[in-house]
Amino acid sequence: MMNRTGLMVILSSPSGAGKSTLARRLMEWDDSLRFSVSATTRAPRPGEVDGVDYHFTSPEEFAAMVEAGQMLEHAEVFGNFYGSPRAPVEAAMGEGRDTLFDVDWQGGQQIRASALGGHVVSIFVLPPSLPELERRLRGRGQDSDVVIAGRMLKSRSEISHWAEYDYVLVNDDLDETEAKLRAILTAERLRRDRQAGLGAFVKRLMAEETAP
Image 1 (tube, rainbow, N blue to C red):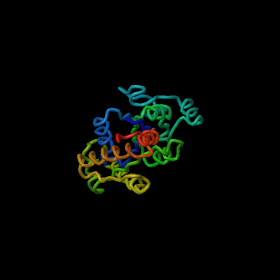
Image 2 (spheres, rainbow, N blue to C red):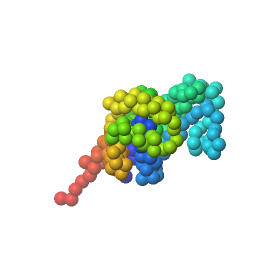
Image 3 (cartoon, rainbow, N blue to C red):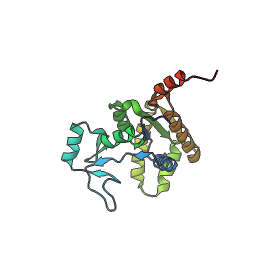
Image 4 (cartoon, one colour):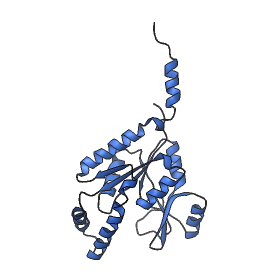
């Protein structure tokens, strides 16, 4: 089997469109797929484990990583910084393993603009309709009307960036959308330019002698 370079799979969607569930299903389907664990400057919450939920760092450590180019993307959210460390992704890529990123359109832009951007496959997940998206958000039973209204407003902003992605899926059926995600990942892994050593293999193949 020929080796290949690992991919960076960006999965984005407005809140409530099913992104987290699809990411979990994708990783259950292929346990070689690793999830990019973000670094953050916020304090751990009860039950959170360093290196599993997040890489918890000080503001000084985070700033130093950004300055050294060790973050593929980063952003400030409510006074805390979040980012995707570069080193674990590069290590996975060298092993031929793919990394899944759960980021918004801004994070996706930064990753695509990075030195590793040529290895990105970006997928945006749309809800079947905005009323359905609101129904799903309310069905969680976690947010107030004010919070839901804010999420719906942000959703319109997120959706406006759909054309920046390689693939766009409408999640009107979770099983069908998962199947499409699997197909995308399988096809992208098989692209000619992503199969390391393919040229050398073909060269040896052409040099083989056949029986007279």
